[in-house]
Length: 217
Image (cartoon, rainbow, N blue to C red):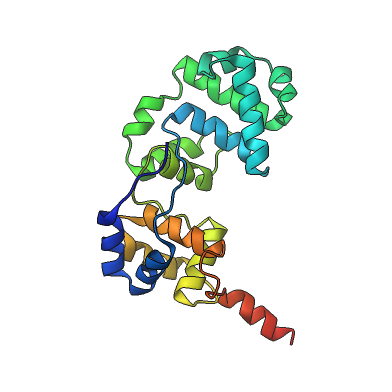
């Protein structure tokens, strides 16, 4: 499953922001994978912290091979050693067990979170062990498919914004200025800031890096 968006979102962003509009025209449509299962999305994000995407995929495949169906009940019934044997660290295994047990016991309601407003859902998810604000925001974007997510905590987002808008730094006030301009389609804008930060438009450089180079000349 991919994150879906179309001309409605991109034309709106182009009309509101000329610089980002030029980037959208240069880069074209961006395809990003999404996961519509909230339980598996939380597990995925816990597993993926501080490891490569490839390692994350390998561990997830091992989980599917081991449990057949990766469900709250199957994970809650597993012991920490079993989870560790799949390549998950002791700490992450504890987070995953705790989350699964909360779902099984009804202490964390997946359906309720899906119906919450953005900030309420972020608060609920970041209350889980191993889930911070940034991770909660990514779950909202790539699982719950919320259309208006732009994460100040994401360093690549900040880099992309510096590059698009030619700032040496994006402080909170400046970030909020752009977030309000790009709302209610900040999630699509996020895709393009990530793309720029990753070098999708080679001639667009990071002013912060250019400033550092000048210091050491």
